[in-house]
Image (cartoon, rainbow, N blue to C red; front, side, top):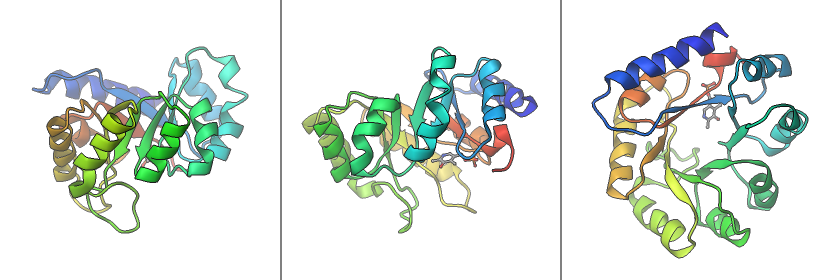
Length: 212
Ligand SMILES: *Cc1c(COP(=O)(O)O)cnc(C)c1O
């Protein structure tokens, strides 16, 4: 709980200083692979926003917890297979990993109204999900204007072992150019930098719960 409180206080400090007008930054506690006791402790402390990256695991963890606490908000942050779209959209409240046209089509077919972030592969890493930057404007237009999906912002995971700041700054610029206000960026190792560069949602796992 100490870690959690330190992050919440840090968020308040950083965004208080930031020169940007912003929507409230939100803290997504990434609960993947964490034991139930730790998650329950956070729920008891009043936290309600959680992130998961695997459908099956998330369902097992949250099915019993959902009825016990009011107002739980679950964010899907991992790779989403098209054959899981119906289940995931029925269980989660937000999707951060809309990364390809086939998935957009599947969400549209399900008449998905959930807020979605488009994942951008800012480092153009072959092993990483996300639309590459030069394809992003067309993909945003396709999802938002043609399919009428509820696109609220952009998400990125910068490459490991590089300065993440240029990636966050790039994502913010891309959002501004395309009329997307929300930015899902920043994890345990770089959330302060992300917040200073305009993150509206940070996704933190080990920084809150400890090592997985
Ligand atoms: C696991 C994960 C996180 C949290 O990572 P930590 O380094 O534990 O904070 C954030 N975003 C995504 C997409 C993840 O898969």
